[in-house]
Length: 129
Image 1 (cartoon, rainbow, N blue to C red):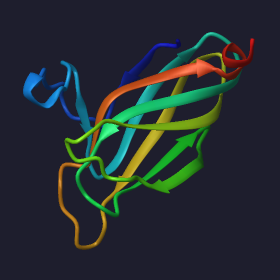
Image 2 (spheres, helix red, strand yellow):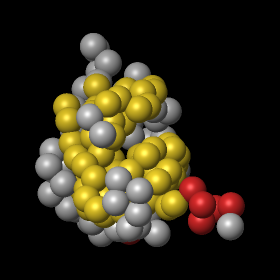
Image 3 (cartoon, rainbow, N blue to C red):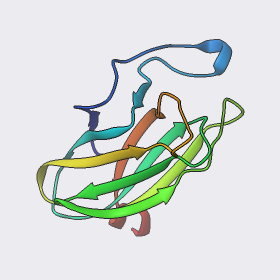
């Protein structure tokens, strides 16, 4: 696994919340832009795994890397019934990469945004070796 840090735009770490099966260190990506910092050991294609929960139907997430939008989707709500997992393939440069997470709430929606439990990056070649 490659080191990923939740940076600018994310809320302060919270938890743990054992009654909700949530570990220490969870953070919200509120509406608007947030940054995940990834220190990639080499240039290449990586799987970006985001473990999450959220509570607002219609929430959209756009992932950007290298200054360009790479993925955009409506994220299925999980409520507190289960954790969700989103997997994206992105290209990273060797060294520090700032990957954008931009959350957009539906017009009639409200809420804290996307609850991020963990973000991991894994070289695509590691899966197929």
